[in-house]
Length: 322
Image (cartoon, rainbow, N blue to C red; front, side, top):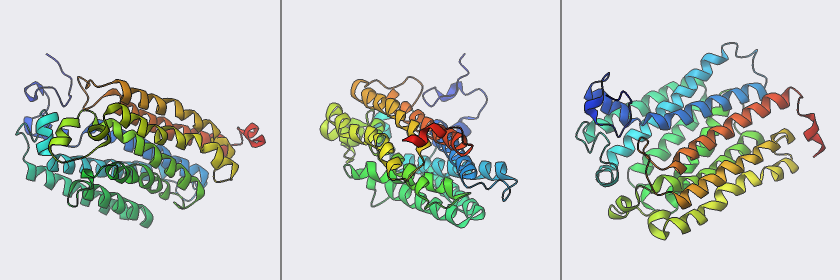
């Protein structure tokens, strides 16, 4: 008997969790929580190094852990609310989810979402004011994405709307734990992430194409088809990373960030997989392009942090000739 715990596995095979608890667990979509947790953790550490705040925050690792978990809980709240408001669509494209299966009630899912939102907000304001402000903004954007006026319904606006909190606000929130979120570095890095997500969000709509159409949600995929949607998304996937040398030239970010340009490679692969892949994963919730979208974002955050560490230690001096 399989011991894997995946959303598509029958709930009867959950050997170590009760059926109800497994339903609550799946509402949070744990795989999607890994990226915000680790990305925020790396960006917080980058902020700590860049702003040289080790002496000011001797317990920095505890703060990073608490703040990263806060953003992960915030993402979990968004996932639960999204499922509570997308039941009709999920019955068509994701019938394995806990609400269509009848394991969790819609009202329960909304209650869980609101509890997690409140917990994340209260925890955020104890870290610092700006972190609390950005967590609140992320909360507002994700709530309005799912609830009226339900920005998810509107073509292209839906991609921009969700890219703002996942890209820009998430970066600024993470940086604000130890630094000024309005420094040129976090603003530039956050805007790159924002533009990337505008294009990459196309990947999540592939398996929901028919369900979205039948429930009144317009996406690039169900409006223009996969090929045109991929081509529309392509500039948003590659241009932000191609502009990194421009940001360096205008001294918005340090020259040692130049290697981040190479994130354009996995970003282009996201485009390729959107274009070519239509089959849903047997275990994960979406296609390979969707998985690579998160992996690329993680690569971006790790690269950003590594370059700050090396750059601030003066080990990348050869980039100063650019």
